Image (cartoon, rainbow, N blue to C red):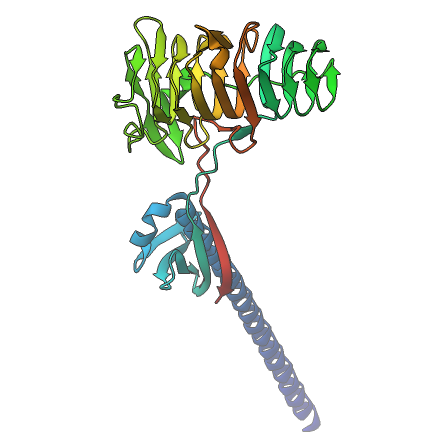
Amino acid sequence: MNARPRQRGAAMVLVLIIMAAGTTIALAYLSSAAMGTAITQGHEDVTRARYVAESGMDHAICLLRETPDAAESLVGRTLGPFTLGDGADAYTLSVTATGIEDEYDIVAQGVSGRSTTSVGARVVLHRTVDEDAPATVLPHGTLFSGWTTLIPGCVRVRGPAHANGNLTVLGRVDQDASATGQVTVFGQVDGTPRSGAAEYPWPSLNPADYENYILDGAEGQAQTVYQSFISRDSDLNGRAHITEANPAGVVIAIPPSGMLEIDEDVSFHGTLIVHGHLVLNGKDERFKAEAQFPALMVTGRIWVTGNTEATIEGVVYAAGGVEGILSDSSSELTIKGALVAGGLGFGLFFDGEHTVRYDAALATLVSPEGGQEGRPTVEVRSWYE
């Protein structure tokens, strides 16, 4: 009779033990699950915080690149916080100068949940640089454009000659003589006469482009004069017209008579643009271009008198060509660079002794519109945490 109660008591104890064990296991499972969730959330916060910090670094680099002139104002300051998304994530930025010009240490600190992560970088700011103005090197000593063009017997071209049209050579060409039409040689061509050559693009030589120009990133404005005569006593004799406001020394002459005459002993530095005809009438006349701009630009003809001894360094543009006037048999014209001319090129009855000495450096033209402004860049030298 005592055995049955003892059996029921043992069974009850066993049930209680099993229930306690189950409860313990359940609690352990729930605790483990909660801990796993917390660990996962913490890992996500750390990963997210780093992403936020890297976003901040991108922001700082963008600030330096887009506003380089404000770089120094960022030094020593803490910028932010800047929020992302719904505002739960944020970052701050700090910039420190290293002591080397345009070199900075950037630290971006990102916060997500309970996690904070920082990333750092040492960067160098490369500020805006003006790209060089596009340059054109004229490949010919003489470049003519017209149905019929001429190199007369009194002219020697020490370099190649080309015509967009027909070319007749009565004088001498030291190198090739080419034309899109026919090359006819009665004089001497030391190179190869080439008929049917490709057309050479006419250079952009528009006087209006030089009224206001850009040279080495600085704006310049031409000087305009209304006169028909330049003598040795003129303000234009020399370099006085080359100023801070007109660094290339561009002078636009609008002669009331339609013709500008240059007397003897005149030395002009810069670019002389003549709206009309130009008369070279004197000994010891010198013209020298500045800054790879043309030396002379004449919308009409260049007339050379018998009293002329002139030397021009740079590109000469004569829309109506170059001709002789007033017993030009003793005249002497030397162009060092290149001659670009319309009309006949040289006049049929041109006389004297004249030379076009091709020089690639002096035959180089830069655009008066200047170069393009370069974009600032930021170079990352190293990363750290």
